[in-house]
Amino acid sequence: MSPLITLIGSFLILIGLSVPIAFAIGLASILTIMQLGLPLTSVVNQMFASINSFPLLAVPFFLLLGRLMNDGGITDRLLRFADSTVGHVRGGLGHINVMVSMMFASLSGSAAADTASVGAVLIPAMKKSGYPAPFAVALTAASSVLGGIIPPSILMVIYGAFGNVSVGALFMGGILPGILVGLMQMGYVYYIARKHDIKATGKFSFRQMGRTAITAAPPMVLPLVVLGGITLGVFTATEAASVAVLVGVLLAFVFYRAIRFRQLPSILSDSVVAFSLPMFAVASAGIMGWLISYLGIAQEVANFILTVTQSRVGIMLLVMLFMLVIGTVLSPVTAVIIFLPIIQGLCIAADINQVHMALVVVLSLTLGLITPPYGICLLIATQIGEVSMPRAFMAVIPLIVLIMSIIIAMILLPSVFLYLPQLVFPKAF
Image (cartoon, rainbow, N blue to C red; front, side, top):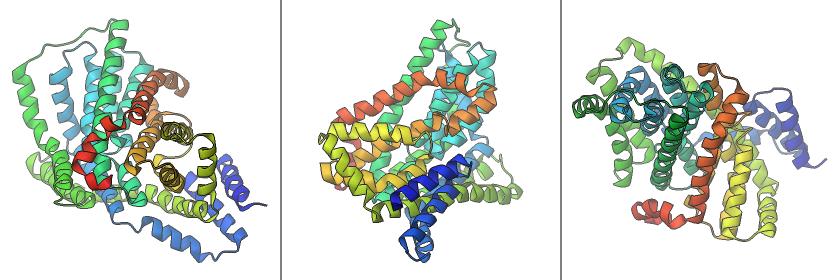
């Protein structure tokens, strides 16, 4: 039996038996290694090599920062600021949902955390205000994927760490598509509000906006710390994450006094657990990614795609579609690590810039967070909103189409979407 059949077949069988994906990947890889007669020490070596990366240290810091922001009442302050800014517009609650997700994304980089924290407040409020429940759930889930696009993005950190791609360039490249996705979602909210005759509530007040801006301003400094420090070359993405956590601690414990020091051990332990689970998946995926390279699968797939089309646009569109499908069954982090050898092989063969392809891959995989059966963000939102998955998925389809239009625009107009990262990080191109 071909090692490739063993690898893929055993993985699919284990998934069918409801074995967790991280374990299924690891066990399938071990079976293939045994068939090839390779030493089992290869398993340990590759698992260690997968997580032995300095840039990956940014991930636990960003997860901890998100926890500090949530427990420190930062989410509530962002909600009040968003309310005072766009709450008076027709579809105000929906606009607030998107705006808070954009701000929360710039703090934590975690889409799931955004869904849970923002959804717990806004989904019930939107339902009470007359929004269809499936739409409230779909919007919350779809806006939360901005956590994977707007910097600091944990997925971009992992892609940069494993693909040896500038994390700073990826961060800068995520700004424009993140803003465009948010604005398009707001436009769709306005359309739904008019369709269901949902009136604006409240009036705009400069005084109220000023008050809420003062309380929300300190945490909004954090993205400037991260991006500014990286852009100016003061520190790396990992060092920026640690500095951001230090600022977050000062805000939560000293400035706002929303968290007491006796809560710190619990926050740290929860953050460690939240970090360990995806890191185990990273380690397991590292074995399969190594096997894909060892068996020459990456080159074979690249050659096959090149026989279909040698156009850069055609190749990137095929990669986008492939990532959309893969994202429905694998987490974005796992998918990146497993298929990165194939992606980068295509970039070399077709002379595609690595940053450009990375941005397309990241945006495509974020859609997996709202597409079943994986769809973790949609799953969290459906549980909060008490809506069935089929109804929520039907409601989220238009929002998926909006994000796909941004990805296609990025493929067709690289000079527009790569202008900012090229300006700030010319050495990455």
